[in-house]
Amino acid sequence: MNTLFTLRSIRKFYRNNIVLDLDHLDIHQGRCYLLTGQNGAGKSTLLNILAFLSPPTSGDISFEGHGVDWKSRTLLACRQKVTLLHQSPYLFAGTVFANVAYGLNARKIPHGLQQQLVDEALDSVGLSGFQARPVLDLSGGEAQRVAMARALILKPLVLLLDEPFSSVDRKTAEMMENILASLPQGGTTVIMATHEPPREPLLFAESIHLVQGRLAGSPQVNCLTAA
Ligand SMILES: Nc1ncnc2c1ncn2[C@@H]1O[C@H](COP(=O)(O)OP(=O)(O)OP(=O)(O)O)[C@@H](O)[C@H]1O
Image 1 (cartoon, rainbow, N blue to C red):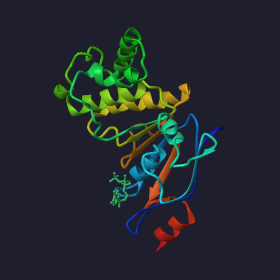
Image 2: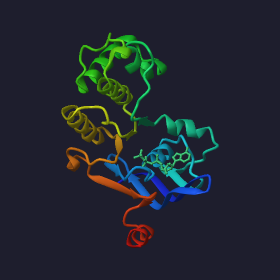
Image 3: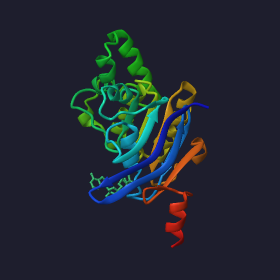
Protein backbone atom coordinates (compact mmCIF):
# COMPACT_ATOMS: atom_id res chain seq x y z
CA MET A 1 0.00 0.00 0.00
CA ASN A 2 1.50 3.34 -1.09
CA THR A 3 1.14 6.29 1.21
CA LEU A 4 0.46 9.42 -0.83
CA PHE A 5 0.12 12.05 1.90
CA THR A 6 1.54 11.84 5.39
CA LEU A 7 0.40 14.58 7.76
CA ARG A 8 2.08 15.01 11.15
CA SER A 9 1.11 17.51 13.85
CA ILE A 10 -0.78 19.67 11.37
CA ARG A 11 -2.33 22.77 12.89
CA LYS A 12 -4.08 25.62 11.17
CA PHE A 13 -4.96 28.84 12.94
CA TYR A 14 -7.04 31.76 11.75
CA ARG A 15 -6.01 34.64 13.95
CA ASN A 16 -5.98 32.99 17.38
CA ASN A 17 -8.49 30.28 16.55
CA ILE A 18 -7.34 26.76 15.85
CA VAL A 19 -9.53 25.27 13.11
CA LEU A 20 -7.52 22.15 12.25
CA ASP A 21 -5.53 20.01 14.66
CA LEU A 22 -4.38 16.67 13.21
CA ASP A 23 -1.74 14.65 15.02
CA HIS A 24 -1.38 11.96 12.41
CA LEU A 25 -3.14 11.26 9.13
CA ASP A 26 -2.02 9.02 6.26
CA ILE A 27 -3.77 9.05 2.89
CA HIS A 28 -3.08 6.10 0.64
CA GLN A 29 -2.83 6.08 -3.13
CA GLY A 30 -5.70 4.74 -5.23
CA ARG A 31 -8.35 4.95 -2.53
CA CYS A 32 -11.69 6.73 -2.35
CA TYR A 33 -12.11 8.78 0.84
CA LEU A 34 -15.18 10.42 2.23
CA LEU A 35 -14.33 13.51 4.32
CA THR A 36 -17.20 14.27 6.64
CA GLY A 37 -17.95 16.68 9.45
CA GLN A 38 -20.45 19.35 10.36
CA ASN A 39 -20.33 22.91 9.03
CA GLY A 40 -17.12 24.51 10.21
CA ALA A 41 -15.45 21.19 11.13
CA GLY A 42 -12.43 22.02 8.95
CA LYS A 43 -13.11 20.01 5.77
CA SER A 44 -12.38 22.82 3.28
CA THR A 45 -9.35 23.87 5.31
CA LEU A 46 -7.94 20.35 5.04
CA LEU A 47 -8.71 20.15 1.29
CA ASN A 48 -6.92 23.46 0.69
CA ILE A 49 -3.85 22.13 2.47
CA LEU A 50 -3.96 18.85 0.49
CA ALA A 51 -4.28 20.89 -2.74
CA PHE A 52 -1.14 22.83 -1.73
CA LEU A 53 -3.10 26.07 -1.89
CA SER A 54 -2.83 27.10 1.75
CA PRO A 55 -0.04 26.01 4.11
CA PRO A 56 -0.73 24.81 7.62
CA THR A 57 0.37 27.14 10.40
CA SER A 58 2.60 24.36 11.70
CA GLY A 59 3.35 20.70 11.14
CA ASP A 60 4.82 18.51 8.41
CA ILE A 61 3.38 17.04 5.26
CA SER A 62 5.00 14.63 2.89
CA PHE A 63 3.65 13.91 -0.58
CA GLU A 64 4.79 10.91 -2.61
CA GLY A 65 7.46 10.29 -0.02
CA HIS A 66 8.99 13.79 -0.09
CA GLY A 67 8.66 16.48 2.54
CA VAL A 68 6.65 19.44 1.25
CA ASP A 69 8.50 22.75 1.28
CA TRP A 70 5.84 25.46 0.94
CA LYS A 71 8.40 28.02 -0.16
CA SER A 72 10.04 25.92 -2.86
CA ARG A 73 9.37 25.92 -6.61
CA THR A 74 8.70 22.18 -6.30
CA LEU A 75 5.30 23.14 -4.85
CA LEU A 76 4.10 23.90 -8.40
CA ALA A 77 4.87 20.33 -9.47
CA CYS A 78 2.87 19.06 -6.46
CA ARG A 79 -0.06 21.37 -7.33
CA GLN A 80 -0.17 20.05 -10.89
CA LYS A 81 -0.84 16.54 -9.60
CA VAL A 82 -3.83 17.60 -7.55
CA THR A 83 -7.17 18.98 -8.76
CA LEU A 84 -9.63 20.61 -6.37
CA LEU A 85 -13.24 20.83 -7.50
CA HIS A 86 -15.15 23.48 -5.57
CA GLN A 87 -18.79 23.55 -4.62
CA SER A 88 -19.37 26.52 -6.96
CA PRO A 89 -16.81 25.90 -9.68
CA TYR A 90 -15.56 28.80 -11.78
CA LEU A 91 -16.28 28.46 -15.49
CA PHE A 92 -15.16 31.24 -17.81
CA ALA A 93 -17.56 32.75 -20.36
CA GLY A 94 -17.29 30.72 -23.54
CA THR A 95 -18.35 27.30 -24.72
CA VAL A 96 -18.46 24.08 -22.77
CA PHE A 97 -15.76 22.74 -25.09
CA ALA A 98 -13.39 25.65 -24.34
CA ASN A 99 -13.84 25.15 -20.60
CA VAL A 100 -13.37 21.39 -20.61
CA ALA A 101 -10.39 21.58 -22.99
CA TYR A 102 -8.70 24.37 -21.02
CA GLY A 103 -6.15 22.16 -19.27
CA LEU A 104 -5.45 20.21 -22.47
CA ASN A 105 -4.66 23.47 -24.29
CA ALA A 106 -2.26 24.43 -21.54
CA ARG A 107 -0.55 21.07 -22.05
CA LYS A 108 -0.45 21.62 -25.84
CA ILE A 109 -2.49 18.49 -26.64
CA PRO A 110 -3.27 18.40 -30.42
CA HIS A 111 -6.74 19.64 -31.33
CA GLY A 112 -7.97 16.33 -32.79
CA LEU A 113 -7.11 14.50 -29.60
CA GLN A 114 -8.69 17.31 -27.56
CA GLN A 115 -11.98 16.77 -29.43
CA GLN A 116 -11.91 13.08 -28.63
CA LEU A 117 -11.01 13.55 -24.96
CA VAL A 118 -13.64 16.27 -24.46
CA ASP A 119 -16.30 14.06 -26.08
CA GLU A 120 -15.36 11.19 -23.74
CA ALA A 121 -15.29 13.40 -20.64
CA LEU A 122 -18.67 14.99 -21.41
CA ASP A 123 -20.10 11.58 -22.18
CA SER A 124 -18.92 10.28 -18.78
CA VAL A 125 -20.87 13.02 -16.95
CA GLY A 126 -23.97 12.61 -19.11
CA LEU A 127 -23.49 15.78 -21.18
CA SER A 128 -22.93 14.39 -24.68
CA GLY A 129 -23.68 17.02 -27.31
CA PHE A 130 -23.02 19.99 -24.98
CA GLN A 131 -19.69 20.97 -26.59
CA ALA A 132 -20.94 24.13 -28.34
CA ARG A 133 -23.25 25.34 -25.55
CA PRO A 134 -22.32 28.65 -23.94
CA VAL A 135 -21.66 28.01 -20.24
CA LEU A 136 -23.80 31.04 -19.36
CA ASP A 137 -26.83 29.04 -20.56
CA LEU A 138 -26.16 26.07 -18.26
CA SER A 139 -28.14 25.19 -15.16
CA GLY A 140 -26.24 25.00 -11.86
CA GLY A 141 -26.16 21.20 -12.00
CA GLU A 142 -24.96 21.16 -15.60
CA ALA A 143 -22.21 23.64 -14.73
CA GLN A 144 -21.06 21.35 -11.90
CA ARG A 145 -20.93 18.41 -14.32
CA VAL A 146 -18.90 20.46 -16.83
CA ALA A 147 -16.47 21.32 -14.03
CA MET A 148 -16.27 17.62 -13.16
CA ALA A 149 -15.53 16.76 -16.82
CA ARG A 150 -12.80 19.44 -16.85
CA ALA A 151 -11.27 17.89 -13.73
CA LEU A 152 -11.52 14.29 -14.98
CA ILE A 153 -9.99 15.00 -18.37
CA LEU A 154 -6.62 15.78 -16.77
CA LYS A 155 -6.54 12.40 -14.99
CA PRO A 156 -5.09 13.94 -11.81
CA LEU A 157 -3.16 11.84 -9.32
CA VAL A 158 -5.45 13.27 -6.64
CA LEU A 159 -8.99 14.57 -7.10
CA LEU A 160 -10.34 16.62 -4.19
CA LEU A 161 -14.01 17.59 -4.18
CA ASP A 162 -15.68 20.06 -1.85
CA GLU A 163 -19.43 19.37 -1.63
CA PRO A 164 -19.61 18.58 -5.36
CA PHE A 165 -23.26 17.54 -5.45
CA SER A 166 -24.87 20.58 -3.85
CA SER A 167 -26.83 21.52 -6.97
CA VAL A 168 -27.29 18.25 -8.81
CA ASP A 169 -30.31 15.98 -8.57
CA ARG A 170 -30.23 12.55 -6.98
CA LYS A 171 -29.84 10.62 -10.24
CA THR A 172 -26.93 12.81 -11.37
CA ALA A 173 -25.28 12.60 -7.93
CA GLU A 174 -25.46 8.80 -8.09
CA MET A 175 -23.94 8.81 -11.56
CA MET A 176 -21.12 11.11 -10.44
CA GLU A 177 -20.50 9.04 -7.30
CA ASN A 178 -20.10 5.97 -9.50
CA ILE A 179 -17.61 7.83 -11.70
CA LEU A 180 -15.63 8.85 -8.61
CA ALA A 181 -15.65 5.31 -7.27
CA SER A 182 -14.17 4.04 -10.55
CA LEU A 183 -11.23 6.48 -10.55
CA PRO A 184 -8.95 4.61 -8.12
CA GLN A 185 -8.70 1.78 -10.70
CA GLY A 186 -6.87 4.29 -12.92
CA GLY A 187 -4.61 5.38 -10.05
CA THR A 188 -6.50 8.52 -8.98
CA THR A 189 -6.99 9.04 -5.26
CA VAL A 190 -10.35 10.67 -4.49
CA ILE A 191 -11.21 12.69 -1.39
CA MET A 192 -14.73 14.06 -1.29
CA ALA A 193 -15.88 16.42 1.44
CA THR A 194 -19.53 16.47 2.39
CA HIS A 195 -21.64 17.25 5.43
CA GLU A 196 -24.32 14.94 4.06
CA PRO A 197 -23.86 11.18 3.74
CA PRO A 198 -23.52 10.11 0.09
CA ARG A 199 -26.32 8.18 -1.61
CA GLU A 200 -24.15 5.08 -1.76
CA PRO A 201 -21.66 5.34 1.11
CA LEU A 202 -20.19 1.90 0.35
CA LEU A 203 -18.60 3.30 -2.81
CA PHE A 204 -16.26 5.23 -0.53
CA ALA A 205 -14.17 2.61 1.21
CA GLU A 206 -12.32 5.05 3.49
CA SER A 207 -13.58 7.78 5.74
CA ILE A 208 -12.07 10.76 7.51
CA HIS A 209 -14.44 12.32 10.02
CA LEU A 210 -13.63 15.70 11.54
CA VAL A 211 -15.10 17.06 14.73
CA GLN A 212 -14.12 20.65 15.48
CA GLY A 213 -10.96 20.30 13.39
CA ARG A 214 -9.86 17.01 14.91
CA LEU A 215 -10.08 13.45 13.70
CA ALA A 216 -13.00 11.63 15.24
CA GLY A 217 -11.69 8.89 17.47
CA SER A 218 -8.57 10.80 18.44
CA PRO A 219 -8.10 11.19 22.22
CA GLN A 220 -8.70 14.94 22.09
CA VAL A 221 -12.02 14.50 20.31
CA ASN A 222 -13.14 11.88 22.77
CA CYS A 223 -12.40 14.33 25.59
CA LEU A 224 -14.30 17.07 23.79
CA THR A 225 -17.36 14.99 23.02
CA ALA A 226 -17.39 13.42 26.48
CA ALA A 227 -17.26 16.82 28.17
N1 LIG B 1 -10.15 32.66 5.83
C1 LIG B 1 -10.66 32.40 7.04
N2 LIG B 1 -10.53 33.28 8.05
C2 LIG B 1 -11.01 33.02 9.27
N3 LIG B 1 -11.65 31.88 9.61
C3 LIG B 1 -11.81 30.96 8.64
C4 LIG B 1 -11.33 31.17 7.32
N4 LIG B 1 -11.63 30.08 6.57
C5 LIG B 1 -12.28 29.23 7.40
N5 LIG B 1 -12.39 29.76 8.64
C6 LIG B 1 -13.00 29.12 9.80
O1 LIG B 1 -12.40 27.86 9.94
C7 LIG B 1 -13.35 26.90 10.41
C8 LIG B 1 -13.34 25.72 9.46
O2 LIG B 1 -13.86 26.16 8.20
P1 LIG B 1 -13.99 25.18 6.97
O3 LIG B 1 -14.50 25.99 5.82
O4 LIG B 1 -12.72 24.45 6.80
O5 LIG B 1 -15.10 24.15 7.48
P2 LIG B 1 -15.98 23.11 6.65
O6 LIG B 1 -15.98 21.84 7.43
O7 LIG B 1 -15.51 23.05 5.25
O8 LIG B 1 -17.41 23.78 6.72
P3 LIG B 1 -18.67 23.74 5.69
O9 LIG B 1 -19.26 22.36 5.77
O10 LIG B 1 -19.59 24.77 6.27
O11 LIG B 1 -18.15 24.10 4.33
C9 LIG B 1 -14.69 27.63 10.47
O12 LIG B 1 -14.92 27.98 11.80
C10 LIG B 1 -14.48 28.85 9.60
O13 LIG B 1 -15.26 29.93 10.08
